[in-house]
Image 1 (cartoon, one colour):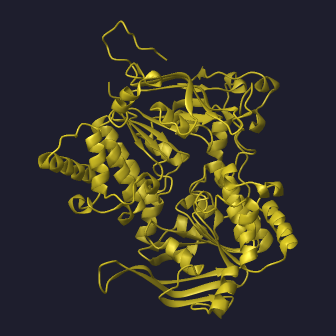
Image 2 (tube, one colour):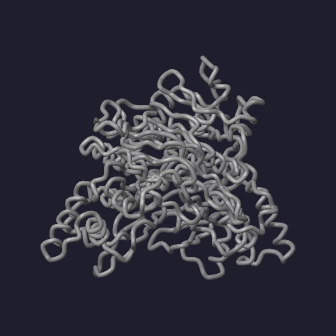
Image 3 (cartoon, one colour):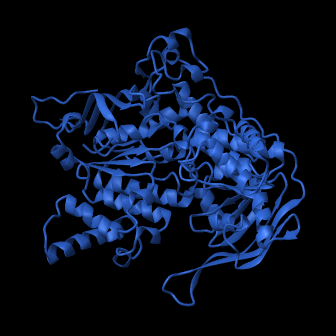
Amino acid sequence: MTAPDSASSRPPRHLLEVRDLGVDFTGPDGSPLHAVRGLSFTLRRGETLAVVGESGSGKSTTALALTRMLPGTGRIATGSVLLDGQDLAAATDEELRAVRGARIGMIFQDPMTALNPVLSVGRHLDEVLRAHGGRQRGKGARAARRARAVDLLDRVGIPEPHRRIDDHPHQFSGGQRQRILIAMALAGEPDILLADEPTTALDATVQEQILSLLADLNRDTGTALVLITHNMGVVARSCARVLVMYGGTAVEDGPTAEVLARPRHPYTAGLLAAVPRLSSPSGTRLTGIPGTPPDLALLGDGCAFAERCTLVEDRCRTGTPPLVELPGGVRAACLPAAGRTDPLPAPAPPARIDRPAPGPVVLAADGLVKTYRRRGVRGRGFTALDGVSLTLAEGETLGIVGESGSGKSTLARVLAHAHPSDGGTLRLRGEDVTRPSRRELHTVRRQVQMVFQDPYASLNPRMTVGQIVAEPLIAFGLGDRDERAARVAELLTLAGLDPAVADRHPRSFSGGQRQRIGIARALAPDPSVLICDEPVSALDVSVQAQIVGLLTDLQRDLGLALVFIAHDLAVVRQVSHRIAVMHRGRIVETGSADEICEHPQDPYTRALLAAAPEPVPVQPAIGKTEVLA
């Protein structure tokens, strides 16, 4: 790395230069948690950099540290963050206010929590514009800011922006809300955009639209992009350079094509092996990285990845490996890899899922209809389900795919009787349960359980894990106190958790562990059908492999019928026996998982498959052929 020359009038070579960054938090017992350790990287004008790694690796903490927006007890303990030579780590609050939004913009992961639900989109943008140079008062100034807000919405692809500007966040789709966040980040015309998982919860086609939008902005405005993600397909599609983080520090960085094609660090190789491939046939088991990320409070000397590494040597546990320059413009922090000239050993071929043939039909839907009324519009409504028919057999997994708004989650809620249908019939083991009585509904809900998308929002933070898992047992009147305690311990073991965690609260667990708790809760009443609504979309690839493997093992052992809703077509293909493709409330195509993915018949199915990113670099990546001086 090159430090800026204070004696020269030339601008620094790098727009952003991070040197030996260390970020600490204070734990509950007062001990320091080293969330980021000795991190160094650079960013040039117009460059695109991906930051990847498992949850807890320090990606989001690094992004927040760049503008000193660390939550709680977080603080920059060591190092510097140089923006055009100005050290933001030592900047005053007034200097930071001039940087945030104006020089460095931030796109947050969850637009529903990042946007204020009581403010219109126009108010959101007006606040940003007033904060960054538009403080003039009067009717003319307000009109100018409104015109600028309409222009920003149009720029990010919101249809009819002059009409939608007064709408509220809930009136937009997930992809449109993400576009609104991008418009807010662009309002200050920043030099750098920090995008923290901007496409995580989006389906393939909307994800492609957002990535194309970021590519256009990078090309047209020269804005540098730091993209934080766990999706290697997004990295291959979008970024010229990639930085891999583990245990709060960089373990590998270099050109995207080089790192993804020839990883030098065993952790990078493990992440790539865990990525589901759309080309992998149905029944292929996802491959995860054995073990779990390190406890940041217990990190000592040596490589943080040593306990999970297949190449580990004794010296790896005693000395911290430095980032070493390797051929191809790559740097890797691995002692065994530093002396290697041959590629890392190829991962073992993925195993097959051991699953018996499906049994008799357990759930059947015929012509389901669900309509939601629009407020203030008499006689008109929105049809979320329009004549949906499907069957689900015992021991079978039916994958449901489609864009946001296609009716997937509505179908899940109707199948689980969370919402009543407005038409059609629903049968459970041959019995008509379309409009059950109160007593029948109690029985139906015991047989059909759900695993929800967000493992953070779906668990009551005030309850212990034991209380959460026991709640369905109490609701359905199953067992006495001692029997319920024994059942909770059994369920936690089935979900891959230690029964001793029953007395802890959800905040003590990672996202993957929380999803295991949700699965244990869903299994409590011994259901026949498990409806999984985007159960792995918020999880990184290694944890995703663990959760999907858990679900398939439980299906084999318990004979469960699974409805698996997801936007990642590769995951859906590998886990499902059959796939149903939904579009505008209808199933437009259904068939075996392999047949749908290899020989799609409907144009909409072909469009979904074409939009699915693959973890193979494409040419050219954003900013790959040219970096602005």
